[in-house]
Length: 457
Length: 99
Image 1 (spheres, helix red, strand yellow):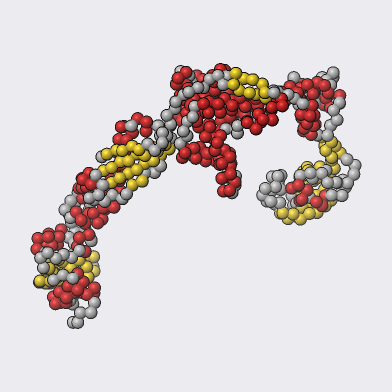
Image 2 (tube, each protein chain N blue to C red):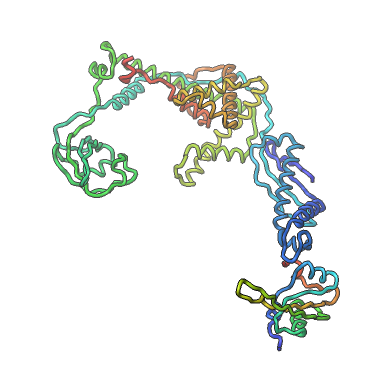
C-alpha cells in the first residue's frame, strides 16, 4: 500500500492511496477463500464449489468489502504517517475506481486542515471609537416610545370607530359566551370584525366567519360558522401626558420631574452606546489582528460554517434560494474573518500560554444557567455529557481571553464627531460570535427605572 | 422429430460437484433435456446453441422417485439427463458462472 499526500494549498491536502494489482488480487483471494469455506451452494459440499461459481455469486460483495477495508486502512496509515491529518476540518467522500482484478486500486480523499498560522503582530493596534453623545432628539424619541408602551385603554361613550378596542361577549350556538377584547387597530382583527364599526354598547351582532389557523387569538383559530357578539365596552388608546400624575402612576417619588426622566433616559442611552462601542472595538481588534496576520481559510470549511450559520439564523423559515444566496454573499466576509481569528486565537493562546481551566468553564455555565433560570449543577452535568460542547465553550472562553489581551495592549482613541460618519462606514459586519455578544449585551443593559416595579424599589 | 427450437430440447445445465469434475477432466457437459429428446436432437441443439462440436451424447433416464405422505403415495417428476462430450479445447461458457 502506497500513500501519497498532495498539498495544493497550505490548508488542503489530497490523500492518495494506491494498492497495486498483486495486492488487490491477494486481498481478493484471501476474502474469497474465507467465503468459499462458509458458502452453501446447491450441488456442492461446503468449500468444494469452484472459484468462478463463488465469484459469480458473491464477487461484487467481496469487492465492496475489500474496497471498504482498503479505504479504512489507507486513512489510518495516512494519519499515522502524517500528523497534520489528525485534526481535519472537513473531508470529502473518497473517490475511487471500482476494484478490478489485475488492476491497481486508487483512492483519493480531499481534506481540509487547519492552516499553518504565522504570527506577525497582534498587539498595540490603534483603534478609533466614536465619541458617545446623546442628543435631545434621541432622548425625545425614547420618551415617546416609553409613553407609547404605557398607553392605557379608556372607555369612550361613542359608537365603535376604527382603531378602537372593543370588549365583547363572544358566543356560538350552544356554547357559553366568552369575554374577548378585540383590538381593531390590528389589521387581522379589523378585517374579521368590520361589522363592529358604528355599533354601540349593548348591540348584538351576528357574524358568519372563518378564522384561519394563524389567527392571533387561539380561541378563534380554525373555527368557522355563525357567531353572536354582544358589545360590552368601547375603549380607546390614550397616550399618557408627562406630568406628576403619570410619574405617580408609574411609581416614581413625588418630587420626580421631567428633568429626572430625561436624565435617566440619557444614562440608559449612554450605557447602550458604550456597549455598542465595546462591541465595535472588539470587532475592530479582530479585524486588525486578522489583517496583520493573514490566514488562508479553507474554502469548503468556510462554506460549511456559512451553512451552519444560515440554518441557525433562519431555523425553519422558508426562504427562496435567491435570498439565501444573497445572504451567503453578505455574511461570507465576516465569517471568513471569524474563522481566521479562531485559528489565530489558538496560536496566540499557545504563545501567550493562555489556558482555560475547568473551573472557568463551570463558572461560565453557572453564569449562563442563572441568566436562563436553570439549575446550574444540572446544567453543568448535562454539558459534561457532551464533551464537544465543553470543548467549544472552552475555546470560546479562550478566544475571549485572547481578545481581552489584544484590547488591553491597544491604544484606543476617540474619533472626532465629524468623522463619525466615516467610522460607521468602516464598521465591519457583525460576526457569528460577536453578534451573540451584541444580543447578550443588549439584554444585559439595565433599562432606567421607568416601570412601576423598578420605581417602587 | 424435427429440430425446431433447441431451447425447448435443452432444459438447463447441471452444475454440481460431480458434473464440474466431469467437465474439467473429460470435457463432458451435463444437461437436463426434454423427456422425448433423442441423442441426435441433443447433439444438434447443443451445437446450435453453444457453437461447439459434439463428439458423443449419452442419455440417462432418471425415473421419478416414489414418495409417500400418509395414505397417499406418488412419485417425483421423471427427468432425462444428457452427457455431452465436446471436442477438446472447446468450452460452453454458461457453465462458468451459473449455478
